[in-house]
Image (cartoon, rainbow, N blue to C red; front, side, top):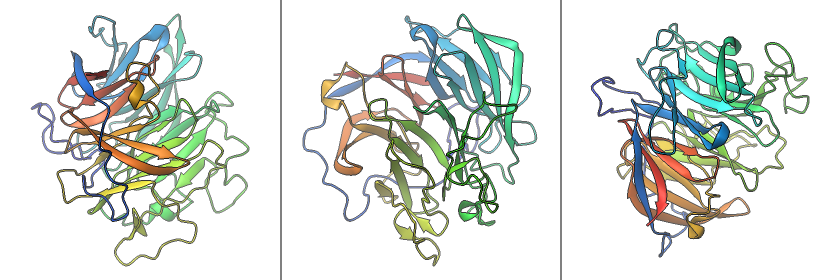
Length: 379
């Protein structure tokens, strides 16, 4: 995603998901819904280049700032002093920085995903006691070298199964020059699934799809991804939804059911969405996106969100919210059995939308990389 930050602190590109696209989508796209739920964006605070967030203990919301700090949002909209500060350990050149944060299900451990000063993607763990980070317990769980400064991915989430999922892009540059997306012998261009508490530095779940395959990395859950910038699990169904940033023509949203055994091939770099990329042929096992849109509008980089499971906006329940970094419009997909049945423009714009947050009460927040943190409320 290209980050044209309004803040002078971030110049040029945060290409956090470099690609393109918006508004028109494919020819077989469902017709836009005639009546979209009425919502508004309520500004709750301003952070310094907020880039990711997560629900925290005691109903709190934790917000990661790209330069390397994590702050806690209180009920009055104030932000705490940094509870984590790795500003001396990361850099914001290219698409680097602090890129993801997550708690385990019991709020006993806190995880950060960032690129270190050498550009290596790093997942670190902290113990948490009584809602507070224990700095002395910090340890590195997993690292992955990055050949370029873009397409780092970096989002992290715990799934309903209690395992940690990690999204890595294809290594960067453009067009996947090393073919990492389809190469199962690298963690790049993949969604990983590990057990960070099962061993040191981590254990691999025995039912991961490529365990025992000598030609594949055991950590891989799914592959064929260009830059999976943001993904989430539906708090109601457990289904996985992922926004993968395209190269030059198509943005895509991928879906897999909670019952999936993993191993999905989302096609990159032989495919960009449902379209062959640079003469590529569609893999026989290609899992086509549940939704795609082209770049003929204002969009350039999909920002995946969440299926709404809050209570404040009943008409929005069960719909998947997403946006685009360059367009900023918040949209919703109605889905049934893994198929999109309707598309809605919710009529609100979050600016340079870089992420969504699902709070502990399942209400959703929108992060504008320029600083604004919004809550999605009923209009």
